[in-house]
Image (cartoon, rainbow, N blue to C red):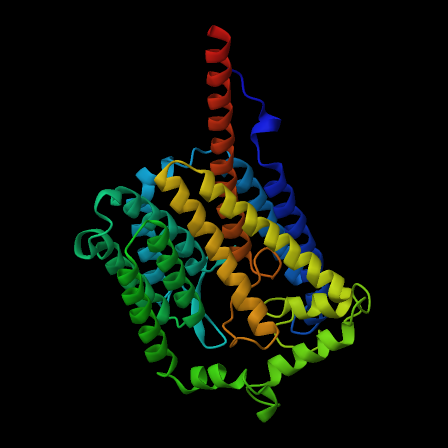
Length: 384
């Protein structure tokens, strides 16, 4: 039976992904050119140039990874998790780690600055999907089935908290819980793990005064309008200024050094100001389409590893969207998590596109299996 390249690819997922990524490039330039003008070497294109380079690398990687059988990652899982842990160690070293705004989360390769935790998120998903797919026969046993991989999760959580990055560490815990859930673990085990995860979050959240202020300020940002509530208030102003139709592309006022992190964490506020409610609905609609498609792919995949891998990828992206949108709208604390495919950040853009390429490959495999099934049924009917 011959397969059609055009019919086998999940064009809805691919088109939506690249449409949103290209839209993100436009918004990154709009939100960052004013920031690029200031400094020792004024260049309004400083941020967008780097982002375009990352986009080019990510787009090439997407085209390659989309055609790599996802089952290959099962065999590479041990290597991937070892490299992930090693990268988290290296980021803490003085000769490679780079400190930005008091956080040491990046490795400076001179040519590019890489954030290892973004790659670790995908590495953890591959590792957990591989391990739990092999434990299906005894997944109802906590000690033998559920617990062993959680030791690795604990190590990764601790290393990320040393950077420190509570937002990313929390998202990894949540994705782990989702993968354990879809692997078929018992409810009492899930509830116990959730309780442990919440306890860890509370302990680390209360371990530093600035984290406590972040967690409490979103409830009433106007209580400290020039301090912990400043980001959210400026975001409110941007959204109110944009209204329904927006002020026009490039016409944001808040990005002119009023709204902090306008090109990264709070880029959705700039979208709202310049393109209004319609722009926000476009972004959220595209994200919803990707998430919905991802859930369908995971549900339809008959291979346990592929199914868990798809669910891990899609819920990792969903959690990032929830955290980012929640912070911008003042419904959740500020975590520093970027908006997938839209925010400035090369590592985030690269790993998101690679993750979605893996999802596209799983979908492609699903389509081919359905075609094989239909072909066999047609052959059997013809023979009878």
